[in-house]
Length: 195
Length: 117
Image (cartoon, rainbow over the protein chains, first blue to last red):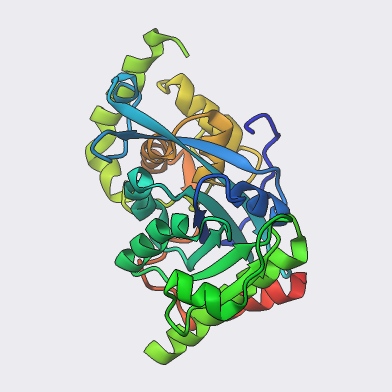
């Protein structure tokens, strides 16, 4: 994922970011790739066992470090003034310290959920709430996944009534865009109410 | 990367760390970076030179630089901070304040996403 040629932005573009999180193999990288204008890229972040980021190469040689891959993509929005970055963040508990670093200044988060293992999304949702980062839940509609009505998902996820719940096919451009739109509409309303 | 190169990189952090620290605090994964006006690369490490070569083509985010150079973004931030202080690199708009996302920005994002559908 690092072999592609750099695709440069022009000056004056304002970057914004949204985190995409959820359990292992739920489709985060697929979702990022579906809307990205660049081939998805990967950074390998290095953390100590205590969850601290390593910021020099000597520290990386230590044995007590762990590497976390973060796949991300970029989409310049029509008009060219904004570049939206989507970061796929692993949802496991041990990677949460890294979230704080990536969540800084983020608009919000999309929690991608697998309807076959709802409880695997709880860690991500709980940690986002603790960080104060608003999120929408997108249920990835795998072909062989059970289909439940919204109210059952809302109950299973224990969602706040205002938190958006959407169905999403991570492979489908329009579907991913609609999930992002649901998130940003929610963020906008929440921000307007707060001010 | 050879082991021989590593000490040079670390030494540059130690030397410039004090001056670069305030810049470092403003850098985010999505901070956009390009080359500045200072061209002299006499005393730079291989990683710094690679970073400047990469940025010569236009603007890239710190995360993109990290991916293309196969370095953690926390390391890239330190390298960029040093090179901003020395005038070799420029950064784009300031890192947004945490929780400081404003209504106008969200409206623009929403309009942009709607226009993509």
